[in-house]
Length: 128
Image (cartoon, rainbow, N blue to C red; front, side, top):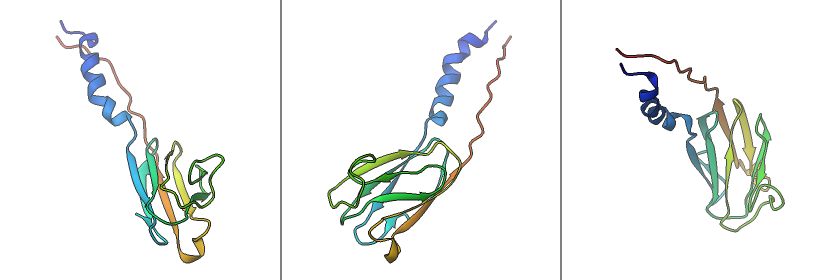
């Protein structure tokens, strides 16, 4: 008789990939745009913003996950021209609207829709 204990490592291996978040790259600049300007992601995913040129930052102005980043997301978060990169995790469903503070008036804005994820409920079983 095979019990669930023998299948647990296999089950864990099959579900581990779906439990991990996916990273979504967003290019900041050059010019006055985010690329892509809109994303649809799942709870737990990350977004990596990378400055490709120009003095920019990324500032979430509304939504469940708020941040303001450039060189980092704590002390140096005003528009900066260095080749910075920041990764943000989105744990909560909802829409996050963001902008470059220096260039929002020129249309440098974007949004991220974070979709709710229903946890998978695992059940034990035995095979005869």
